[in-house]
Length: 599
Image (cartoon, rainbow, N blue to C red; front, side, top):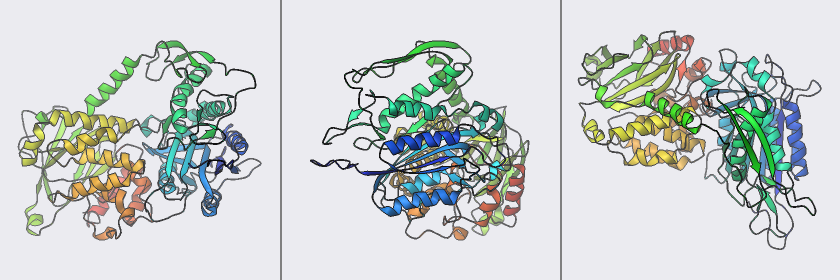
């Protein structure tokens, strides 16, 4: 950020929009949300930001149009280098990384919410070099209506995607992982204290903070605190502050940083006159996240500048966290030796019992084999002679599990999809090459390594901490070519970071495999950047609905791939990593299959 030029003392313009909603309609009132927004607004004002404060104090309501107009005014002014958007209030997750902020009219009015993922996406095209989102949301589980019908919208202008010049940093008070881990609304409200905002403002208000660094080229010398320096501090300090309140209270924030110096979060407070910045020590006793109830003791020492910032507590039990992760990976790892030898196309169901399976254009049977997992169900799909004679290429299968939930999945010839289900939610769909195919012969040599990578990608995505860069090599360099599952995870990871050129590379690479239809999610992620998007009604994507649930946050009515069916299904999503529908949603999907609204 060009904050200072040699010989000048004029700082670049900064703005802040601060939102605090204690009372979302039908939700338990919060006590600290409006106060958190006001406290952050006061800090931003002291920083020299032009501030808009939107809170529901004195019976006022916060509406989406107010937030949109406040952001639009900043964009259209054309003078701001940085925009901070702060929210405190109720929030929900419908998929990992897809948080929604509930405004006063939500959830009864499904439009009165902020679609954070869509807003982050649009922020990169807003013409503001640095946008920071701070989400101190009191997140609740989504048991059903009306919360699962929340749609929300972007608070940024709807502009065509072009060369993106802006960078976005996001501060989540709580890790945006699997929605199934969220607690009921009454419990989340009781726990909520605005702790993340308190820890953030303490760090920003500290005189002579050791988090500060000199801004390159600033005259006079200016000390700033960057997002990159705040990240490790908050991710370590917030859980400890939570534990100091109660050993039963856990809170693990997550910070996603795209920027580096000279872009910064805050101008640092100068040291107190005549005093060396003192170290700060906080003693604590806590139950560490993942420690399974084991009590720990330790201390956080915030030393003077130049010293080591964050010693680890004396007993963190990292080995237990590693063991938990390893167990999740093992659960989702593919096993080529368990694939049915006589099946070219099909599915294996793990963790559930199938109630209904519908695949128009395919004959379905149950293959037999000695190598099959006794705890799984195997289904073989064979192209119906009439469909083959007509040149049709059916692409969709509907699976309904015991309990009524279900999923629409892509049928990929030559692949067997291993569908792992837990408590009626789809955890992972691992598409593996069928053993009788030429593709499998190339895949087999590096199968163990690739299956490990795919399982780790699934677990990382479920925890809301997937880094696509770490898996790109496994995607492009592994033998066997096209890998639908890993391609989806990596593409979504890049999209969440605004790296759409990398997404387009993956999409175009997959398009070179002419034996398979394009995946709907790949077209969804690149639709806005295509010069002439294909009309949704004539597009041969599989399965014409998002496979990963995160895609629904981007599938808004203005998207060229949006169809009326998407609107009917949207209110019947079960919060999960992979798109899972309620029993009502399954009934809608089944109707759409006959006649074939979905192909």
